[in-house]
Length: 244
Image 1 (cartoon, one colour):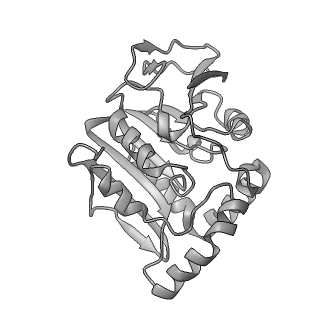
Image 2 (cartoon, one colour):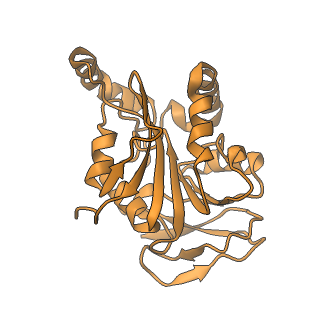
């Protein structure tokens, strides 16, 4: 169910890393070369253009030029304390975090991780999927996600894992693209979704991610919440236990 992946890091985080969710916590020592990869039994990564770092970075550069960079700054600007970034990709957010943040980042694709490691050599990088985060319950004060849950194979399970690893008074901060509010655009998203998902590494353009976040037991806060077309940004707090 789980396998180990060697990922170099040089950060002393003090975050306890468990061999499996809910298992005994093992403090992560500094300057070691080990991180655990948690992989659910049905996690078969979908390969697409977004899985290739050069294409991914080129696509993100265009989006950042047209406004995503400001949203990324808002996203990480609200991170506090021990912070987990889920699906860090090639690490385009990692240099944006402030000095008061103790950062851990997870990413399932080893090619993306290699680029992220070059960008942020002092950040603890862990090869892991969102659906099986290898950390103890309540390990983090903040969880950050940027354009990730559109492509998580089991988004509900991934958000339940975020809920589990977040402190009761912690915050989930997200930037995502979602299903359009326009009926004809939503129908178009439904039509192109199979081909888009195949080409774009598992991305689903028609996911109702905000509803999934609420279904997982979070309450989306009005402060800082923004929408632009199908793009959304928001912070959410825990409101109740996640649904089974």
